[in-house]
Image (cartoon, rainbow, N blue to C red):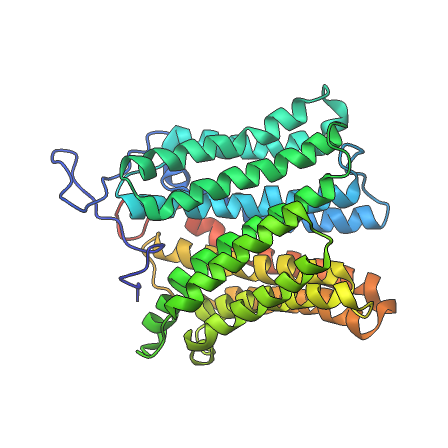
Length: 418
């Protein structure tokens, strides 16, 4: 069944071209260019994100083995971090926001040729960064930095026109991602030395902030609608505290990322983010893959923040393990879960995944466990853990692409727009 109150899966109401849409009705999208894949923002961007996830991590593993050279523009380590955040994660965020903003505002964002142009701009950024050493100085930065402003325009027009003030924060998020990306490129160009790693980590902070905001809005609702447990709810005071704490941590990471006080705030934020889930009903979701993957993915955020606090005071935990709890665990699990859910809801299909997708949820969770927990048990296993985690991650997203590519490339099965 489709969740009727779900802002990411509300069915669009088609309207014949001979009449105007009724009040509260989203007009039928006209897609004369690109067909089904250009009918709604989630389609090209979820497909690109899935394929990119399958390709990127094996390339990174090959670079670790010395079999592949991503070039000297960013260096192998920073290239991997940059492309995971400003490539993969940004593609998923773009697909979600372009789709959700239409429901929030009852106005279209980008479809048809405009949507394909946006997707092409994102793809051009990936090639520009990878091939930066062969391009004129500054051109890779210009190409890569062009996408987020274009996305902001596509999102901002309907949000501002509808005076949808609640979601102005999403425009600020896009701007923050662009600024973080800018610092990475300025370091690569020698203008802001020492900022490429810091810029990547700030990008992770912004992505986690988006998740914190959206999780409180939709995870309790998704769980309540799927399980029919009426007691599932969000606690308003904890929701406000969670968003405020995540925002404070982002600011501190910009100003004093290595300070002990920042680590303490990270630990406190982790505790608040864990406490807010008390009434979210995770225990009721274990038989519903599309719901339990959201709770499992979210759980890695407080885990990662608490590990970060411990790492600042103890050598028993490496800081990079905290970072990968947030990226492999939270970003990996939640993007896979949300892409799976949104693609079903917006293609007119029931919110039930086939077994290969459930398997992908298990695999991405195992990838996080291998990447974070295994090195904590024995540091000698670190390199093997990275390889196992990377291959398991790639397998998870390969299953997603295999199942969802036909869905993303085909029209809605109910004949409606999108």
